[in-house]
Image (tube, rainbow, N blue to C red; front, top):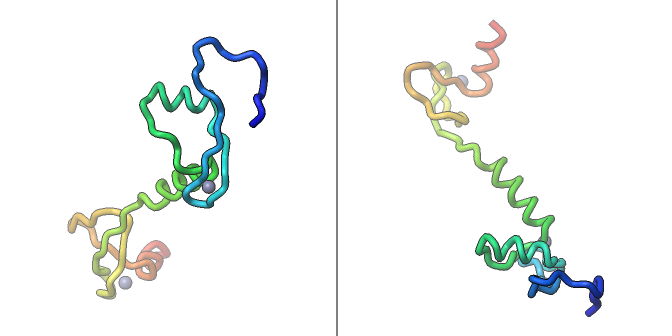
Length: 103
Ligand SMILES: [Zn+2]
Ligand SMILES: [Zn+2]
């Protein structure tokens, strides 16, 4: 193992280490700064490399949209909408919604 520099921060007990990502299996550096950051917040060591963490975060955000199953007020087919149907307004499937917009 190499050391990046000979001078070390006084209060730092940390050394950068290699961790293995549980998602892609790649090894990644858990840097001293990261370790301090994690330790300060009481986090456990990361299980995933920064790329996989980013990917997961993005997926989470995208996948967060909850879809509700409902029935189209126009043609009566089953459809899903990204909001909770209140029953006050008619909900249409994609096809009928388009038709209504064009009117
Ligand atoms: Zn990874
Ligand atoms: Zn419809």
